Image 1 (tube, rainbow, N blue to C red):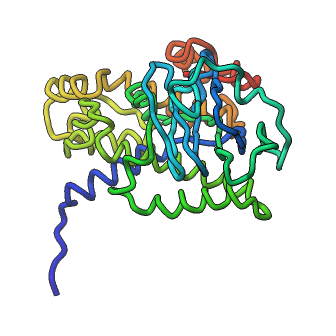
Image 2 (image 1 turned 120 degrees about the vertical axis):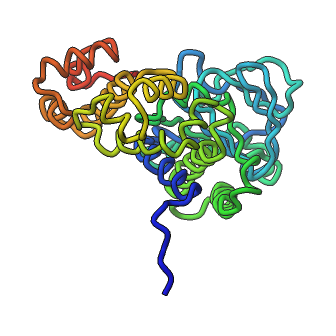
Length: 329
């Protein structure tokens, strides 16, 4: 019998850290649309002040996705893209088409099920000649990893991932089939598949190094700093001190503080406080957790101290979320 090594392999350690950090990810579809268009077409997609994530899938035909920054992405059948920052974009049969004539999502639609609608602009066009799309508006938050969202590209294409992650292909094929065939229950199946594919795009981006987001790559790759991040995420309510975190990393306080700031861009105390406030906002808004319970879970001795910290980080008191208002942290 062979003894198993006590040291965790670097690959396993990286996977553990990514898994731990992604536990806070929220990527949930709010509304979905199955769309049939006849060429030529050109529509705006999204809105300048709508920062919710968008997802677009091409089930049949081709479309050009022109991002708000002007970058053109030509998408064919079976291709999908996540737009994590939302904003205003354009969908056209060709990138050379004129400016948008209408907002795609404002076109007349009919409900298929409570969260899925259908848009058809081409009743006179034979079905096999129609471009078929499936879109989603998504509530997207990476929880304690939220600083990474700002580093994400404007458009994240699934086509760049299929070689490395072949397991995505069957999901894309199933989406195309469901969107084209319209079998019983297809709307709900499409919505769930869209959620999963979008989450796979985010996970793949993180696993591949966060688009060369240098600080976070270093955090994910540094085994000693990785231990610290895992400890913080596993016990956010613990009364951590810089000295304890330095011991976790196995270095002096000064070396730890300097290394942490260099890698993450914030001090350990700021990182922990921001993480706590994101967790609290999620608990209060989505789970209905009372403010005093959230404060206790996160190690605050009083609701007043927690509320002051919450307002300092988010700009508003937790009672605003508890009253049903949306928090954008």
